[in-house]
Amino acid sequence: MKELLAQSIRDSLQVLGITSETFSVEQTDNFTHGDYATNVALVAAKSQKRNPKELAREIADRLSKKLPKGVERVEVAGPGFLNFFLSREYFSDTVKEILADEKDYGRNKTLKGKKVMVEYTDPNPFKELHIGHLMSNTIGESIARLFEAQGAVVKRACYQGDVGLHVAKAIWGMQSVPTRDDMPLEKLSLEAKMRYLGHAYQLGAAAYEDGRKDDIEMLNRMIYDRSDQAVNKLYIWGRKISLEYFEEQYKKLGTKFDFFFFESEAAPTGKEVVEKGLKGGIFEKSDLPAPGVAPASARHAGWRQAGGAVIFRAEKHDQTLHTRVFVNSQGLPTYEAKELGLALMKEREWHHDASIVITGNEVNDYFRVLLAAMKLVLPELAEKTEHLSHGMLRLPTGKMSSRKGEVITADSLIMQIAALVEKKIEERDYSDEQKASITDKVSVGAIKYSILRQAVGGDIIFDFDKSISFEGDSGPYLQYAATRAQSVLLKAKKEGIKASVAHVPAEVVPFERLLSYFPETVARAAREFAPHLLVTYLIELAGAFNSFYAHEQIVSREDEHSSYKVALTTAFRVVMENGLGILGVSIPEKM
Image: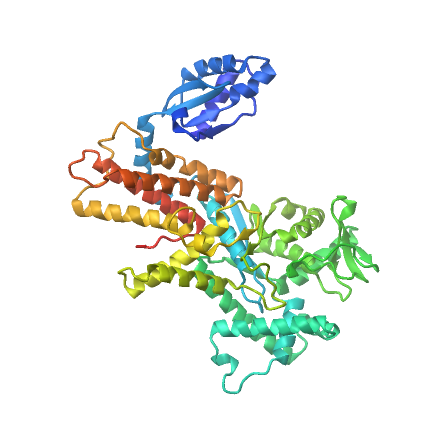
């Protein structure tokens, strides 16, 4: 409807001889002011040197001659706004459409034929999955699903740092950690094995700071070269355990990746790209330390001393950028070079139209330099690469550090939330199996909602109590509204009342209007890389339904409109399923 109104306005302006202006058509906050409003007259009045209200009346008269189907009337309001009122039939037709389309409602074909690769999560083997990875995974999965809803073919990719100093530190720690004869590593659970690797990394990180830097860097070289059998054995074991553990976490979060890329595979390809660029004058040799401050992320540590290294002087191309190392003085490709190799690997593995890379915002400066270099050495790939960064997920205790062993793992956060949910539902008359299912879905949904409820980019302080509340601004609140609707539908089925639009009441209820906004909301959220827009919409919709539920008797054999109310409830359930599905949130059977 929004696009239909915009096109009608453009057509009317053309007939009136007014040059097309940049105007907005937005949903109104107050339905008494119509369903949509536009500022076109206010904008056009400036260039036309006209009174906005008079011009608004002229545009309204023109529009009234041929309003889009479903629009009842247009009115001039305030200093020159135009308010559009949709017909009663439009909303009942929308309900009919939702019931017919079901899972397809809200989807469109805007990006049909387009191939999009979304890269996210990106954990490092030999380290546990932490709450920062939860941010990336939750946002990345929702972005992937938003693009699928636009008709794109989406492939999910995960890029993992299976080589580098963090691996060398972990293996140094593994060599130093004594194993108990009565409890060999292979008898430990997968989670315990990962805790062991995390402890080994802490030991190695501490040793690196306490005078063993040269030893660990030599070990790093061995890992790259695969030159030591004993080291290789530890490396293979630790990598295998890490990947098995990550896969278990992805299952909990509802993610299934299509491609797994690794730094060990990207390194040689990236180095070749840099060597080619070196010959072309894009990169250069340096005997001087590379300027710049070390970034916080271990993934992007290419700032180290660059004596004999290959560097990219990005400031030559953009004064706001800085120099970075792409091959270090030991001849090893840095994260920057590997990223160039990754871009090529993605393209060779699956030719795509767009590559969306999701990371924490602490590497924004790094990515700007990387993309500047990519534009020169791999221009076609740079053109279709989009970097989307998010903030940090923090607990009230503050910032975490894997080096100091202060990491809050994804698993531990999920378990903490699960314990709170279990306590909340412990007195409900559900079977153990039902309680387990509810706990799993509500705990993961609570975390995902807390991440997606605000615009991508800002930090989040996780609120445990608020996250599991069944009232207000929370994931469980949305899940509860959806399960409430389902219970109404089960009651209607028992009473033999089927959903129907045969007898429609004269009054349009607020949540009925909101149902029609779902497709536009999904499209905008995808266009703006903004899952929070969908979250905000679903909260408003759930609130409107709950109000309807509180004030109306939906299931009643004596009410001629009961079948339509059941149809409305069915439509609400469909939209909630589709909307929460895009966010990666499952709905329990009961709450």
